[in-house]
Image 1: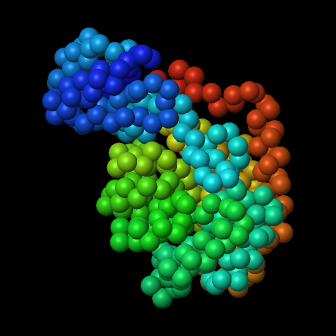
Image 2 (image 1 turned 135 degrees about the horizontal axis):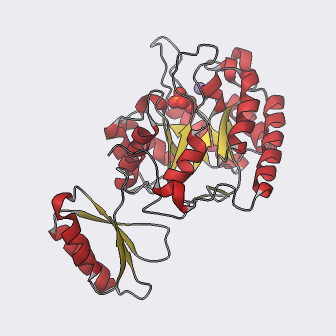
Length: 358
Ligand code: PEP
Ligand code: MN
């Protein structure tokens, strides 16, 4: 449940609420990004729910007490009606602007990282990506440059002024990746690696959580809940395709996820058409469709010579293709914004409805 304090409530009144919640064996969790003090009650409330709700309702300084029907409490829009806006140096994610994350699949060396960074910033990228610790299907494939790669990414970010994002694969890497990168990426294969989710949640940096290739939207949001409940409110969700019977594409891009997530959660949503399709020529149309569907941004792979890339060359754009795609998505984004003032308004009915089995 969610306890909303009145505008003039004192800190003592809020503390009394927190104490009552704790005495019921539950955990009070302050919600960020809201005007008033809002305390989420976490844990299994069980049969004491009605009793606790009426007790809280009567406490001085309490404005309202409402149950949260979703199993993901902190990630739900019920608990946090305003969109989460993530502030990075020089850009914001989730504020209605268009986020364009771009860079190589793997950082292969200093020169290629710098060259790619200069090309993507010139074409309008707002966040720089590059893989240093690579999750590869084959143990014989290039595994990434590791810490050396992180240093090149950080240098390229500094030179171009772009915040950076890179994947972290295991809890032992979290500290070093958080030291060198502005956003931590959790990849599709690790979406349900709960010890990793908890570790990134404690690292003090925003996290981008990619959808597990076999995960439902609810499982994905439960994974986000691990991160938020571990202390990190700034989580970006990235739809990157799921596995279906279709083989022409690497994955099947589930664009329904975009408007659905905007209804279910306050967290920003971006789409990765590179890993979703696996084919360079499909990246632009799917990026356009993602932005038309209301995505807060896209993430795409770009390489100076895609045919020679050490990973994911088939889906990587050339600099020219990236420039073309970036200018097209910017136009679509402008167009979508002008169609209606608030095209993805989270108005009552859908938010209150839904199909949660819990
Ligand atoms: C990536 O973005 O580099 C990556 C490996 O993506 P995914 O986890 O979606 O496969
Ligand atoms: Mn890749």
